[in-house]
Length: 124
Image (cartoon, rainbow, N blue to C red; front, side, top):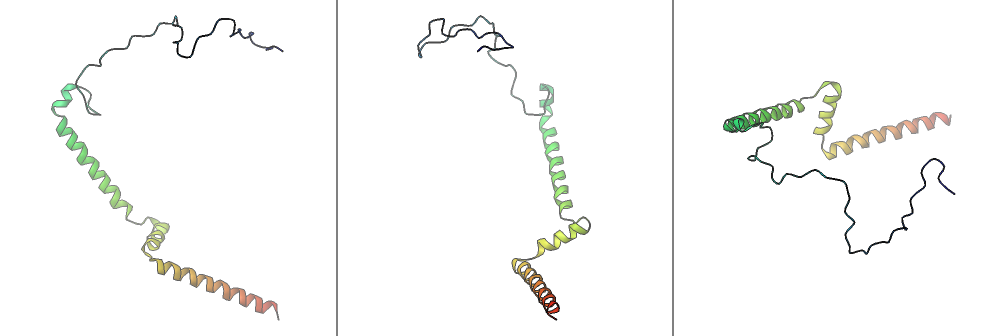
């Protein structure tokens, strides 16, 4: 059966093949020339021209200082609880392992006591 909508496929075995170690036949398509060397001195990210390199160290230090101040401000604001849920989260973070286990134990005892009371009422 043939392909209904497309062209019939060419017979790939009509031409003689080549050995595995031989190179593929050259193609007729032209490729663009690759430059041998990209010119210019190496630059750091963010600098746009060689004129910026003259005052680049001052700008770089200023950018580092600003980034450090921003990171410090974010770290300080993250420690403050935000609203009711934030304060609850802070309380949970302050709890030790034994405090957490003690709280879970108390809740479990309350549930058992409530179940026992409900069972006693049902057996009247």
